[in-house]
Length: 395
Image (cartoon, rainbow, N blue to C red; front, side):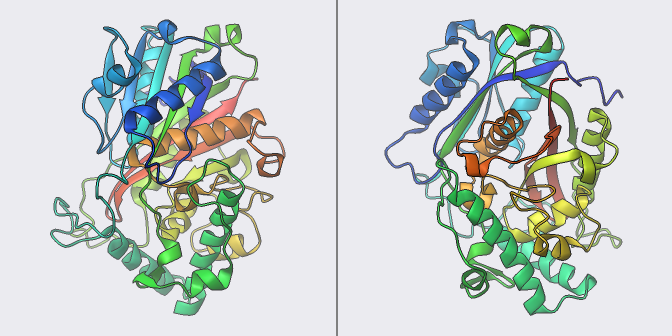
């Protein structure tokens, strides 16, 4: 295994993203077209220049025809990727392999989902769950992880809930600054703490919403990236770790711990040459499907010591102005979570931040932005599918 084999071989030269939200006036095809042509314009290329494509969607399409039909792509090698909530990043990762192998010079990646018209929402049972069986809900399982975290780290329920509320306040503030976010209204700590309970201790503002949206990327070989732009962004490495789903059976498994996430992060750091994530990662997008997920993921990814998220978030460590801004666009919590689009949307945000081209000046992360991290994650505690991508600037 050569974890650094992908490093600096693939460049992102263009990206696009639709507004996320209740896009009743847009079909899935409309959003695919909008995101793709924004990415093409950003890259300065035309659709006829694309040699191959990958599409990520969980619910809203099948096969590569999910993009060939709306984009009228004729007889190109196209494929659909799916890996739970990491679906968009899986399409991106696979496309990178196609470029790094030397087979293609210029490829397209699209992630999309049309959920608001589908009826999917609320608290669907994970009837297919191999770990926890029938009747399991995502809020229910992450709620168990939260209460376990409180117990292990000696937080009272009130202290724990206020810690989680700070995650939501931070992410809604970030979303309020982004013109493409689903939710664009800041909230107060008291609003978050006093919100109706969904699955104790998780309240309404601790849970992300299903959303419509699409995002796209144009990738090329790093060797030719300068032909298109000077501020291209390089792919530094990946980490993907899917465990055996033994969370229920393993007597040593701790519900408030994310071993797959930690391992995926370790793989990606090794691939990118990162030895001190807390010092070297400048901005990060993590999978805040629930506020407790962000807490556990930041610790698993070594942004702070285990059990110390509370102190860090209270100190502003993860704010836009902090040491490592996490979910600078609002994350799943405020930007929204159209499953297949999420990983590509996260990549779009890091791409813009590393370029210094956030949509509004007040959103732009300051400092020496060398590395950015993208981490969508499917599954539930005890059965996780995290995919970590490290991006970086040239030079």
